Length: 352
Image (cartoon, rainbow, N blue to C red; front, side, top):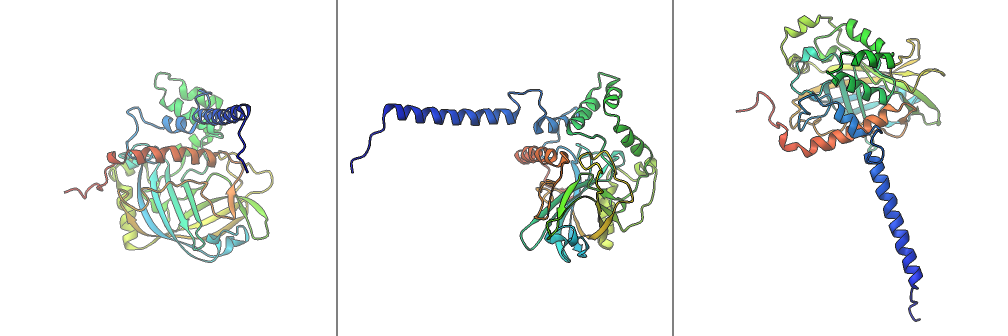
């Protein structure tokens, strides 16, 4: 059969269609990058707002830059299997890679100056699933919205306006509760004595297809020793890493995972609001930290603790923060990966 020739009109139509598709893709990329809407909040803007006045520490995470790695297990007792079909809640022991850290963009910050500490986890299960979580010691978040978080960073950085934080607080009154916590809550001298909270809400789905909105916390087995900020300063600039290393060398350190289930009407989209203390709580198992390693070339250094990396049986809720965190973490990860030559791969104290 003779080959049919395409008419000039048909060829022109195809080219127009291709051009239209390309144009749409370009516009979509430009919108995502924020070029068409310069006032739109983008992940890059959020990450950029975290940089200290002298610029970011190249090669490091853009926030929670100071930290130390650990490995261990999550020993599930099976009790949370009624809430979620995720394998990590079936009775068993699953490997964990994690990180203790400080909420600061400065990897050389004085430990005594960081009011908020963090715990990040990456748990893998035999079915090939991964669960990642990044938690902090604060019992609730300072702001209710992602835009509010960005505005907070701008207010903190605005040294030219003495009323910057006052104006911010007027527009975001929820920060008052966080300020009271920061000013009155006890300090501990160890990562091992801290409670770490998810703050964000997630949805657990069980084998029957039932959904429950939850938050979780990791509660330490070690009894907290309340100390003053001055007592912390007397321990030196890097006492937290030394302390957790010594403790784990002596014996594995443990935290109980408590899953809190929301009641109808609880604020699931606003991490600045704590849920009432009488909510149902399920003991899901125990985090066991067995080995501490310095972060340079340690097992946690190159992990992006993206809170939206979730196994089947867990998914995001109406809380907008996990998606925003995921996007910002990706920007941070890509930037620090590109700056690998600037990262000090040899741990402090190991240089010859």
